[in-house]
Amino acid sequence: MKLQGKTAIITGGSRGIGYAITEAFIREGARVAVCGSRPASAEKAAEKLRAVYPAADILPLGVDVADSSSVSLMVDAVMKKWGRIDILVNNAGVTAAKPITEMSDADFTDMLNINLVGPFLCTREVARVMIAQKGGSIINTSSMVGTYGGRNQTAYSASKFGVNGLTKSCAKELGPFGIRVNAVAPGVVGTDMVAASVTDAMMAAMQAITPLGRMADPKELAGAYVYLASDDASFTTGMILPVDGGIVM
Ligand code: NAD
Image (cartoon, rainbow, N blue to C red; front, side, top):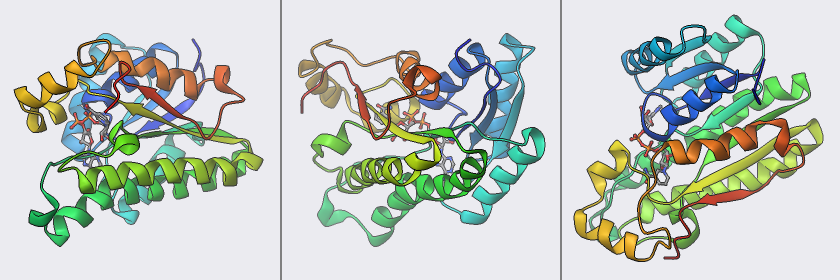
């Protein structure tokens, strides 16, 4: 029970990596605000979790992380229910592959708004709470593409390089308040995102350059988040932790 008594917000918690993180946090004793882009998807995830963990304290919330008023409402709802926020996981994200020459203004800015402005807005709101509490842990979901870049991934990789910059700068700025800020950089993970965007040929090519020779199950990511959220990582901040099967692109 590494997160006993702690309160966590997980954006993009309704499915994929975020759902696996939410489930692991519940198993470790945390109270969780499970956030999806729509109230119905968050509620559906909460129902699924309650069926397995009937004693869990779960708050399902619909939030658009790219919208500051929606983010404020999310933080208000969590503060009203539990009165504190110990852990924020900025995990919500989208991807799309397109050559830069075919990318519209909106293709680029919409992705930046969800993947980078979203974590900024959530971090800003939650940091105000954590500063008053004198502590907390913020974990961002980056990507291997935030280290290596990727062909046809201009917007996505720019957003994840930005997430790394946000992580390292916030670690410096918020450290004096007892707030740790880290990121997890997954490789290829079997989620809806990958099913929708990675072709069989791309998958074969990625597996060929992954020492472990396969993609990850979302559950294989969750332990890294538990570690960074817990007191086991009490002296770890500003780290971008790869959980990628050893891939080198
Ligand atoms: P997914 O598509 O299964 O889940 C994405 C989640 O983000 C969903 O819960 C969705 O509701 C939420 N979301 C999307 N737009 C939102 C918005 N505007 N406001 C609030 N929530 C929104 O994807 P996933 O694979 O689980 O991805 C989770 C994170 O992991 C993303 O940040 C993604 O970039 C990152 N990632 C994924 C992989 C992978 O291989 N799957 C690899 C590296 C990084």
